[in-house]
Image (tube, rainbow, N blue to C red; front, side, top):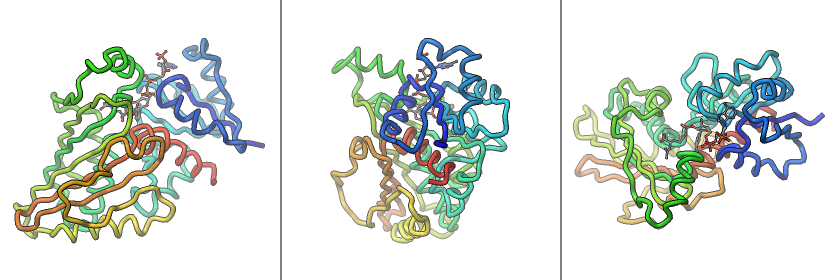
Length: 308
Ligand SMILES: NC(=O)C1=CN([C@@H]2O[C@H](COP(=O)(O)OP(=O)(O)OC[C@H]3O[C@@H](n4cnc5c(N)ncnc54)[C@H](OP(=O)(O)O)[C@@H]3O)[C@@H](O)[C@H]2O)C=CC1
Ligand SMILES: CC(=O)N[C@@H](CCC(=O)OP(=O)(O)O)C(=O)O
């Protein structure tokens, strides 16, 4: 029997992308709620309980409600929302987090898909903290740019309506309360809340995250080559992951560092740049907010949970 997959929130941005990614999958049975019934609690409960895996592509409160509607021991859940990313009993759905994470996802009943913003910074910072090159107390600040699909249907509609009149670069997170701070702190193994200072660009999807590092205050200042080696070693030890580390290079500009370059894929590429004489470095990540940042990661996790 084919595993039954239910996408709760199938008609939203993330849900539609997952649906498209699964369209050609003959090995799965997609069970679909009629669009007009998508917010009916009883109908959702029926589909959630009939599914082998339910993928929640909903606002946080609706995602929590979906979990509460599951009344059996068999339905596994992948939640794309922010609701459960640091919650007890949930595995974090970033398969390349460390050598064990893909196995943990494979056997989990509840998996929280990562947020789009924290994944790049976690991918670079966690290996450095693990290797002892950065202390857990390092003051981290993240900036970057994402396409407007990161804001879901309301932001997409707003940008499409404004067209060329929409802002080309709109910084946000200005109250310093960005919702991704808890998961970034937890999974990058930081002891202090990092600053998240994102921006939206006038393009639909794709993103770049940047973590500038002022290394001068550390007892032992790591070189750029050491930072790069620690990150490369981390990902070299992970089999079958989708994260690539660019060779260490001193370049003023890199054309591939384009937010849209991995659109439609599940790839993530990491870069380390440094000026050792100034004790400064930059950690960059390029990926698709709707790929590795959301739908692609959800499908990767689903395959792990199905043993595929
Ligand atoms: N967009 C992105 O880049 C990313 C999004 N996410 C997360 O994924 C989740 C979905 O986001 P996204 O797809 O962007 O959002 P959208 O707004 O595009 O889609 C949400 C969908 O959920 C439906 N919905 C809302 N409330 C309920 C409810 N009570 N019951 C059933 N369906 C409901 C909406 O219907 P309607 O439109 O009719 O209200 C809509 O179809 C969010 O938690 C978001 O934070 C995660 C990573 C990246
Ligand atoms: C442009 C924009 O608003 N992006 C969203 C994040 C999108 C994302 O990663 O989603 P979740 O964490 O909700 O799953 C934000 O920064 O809050």
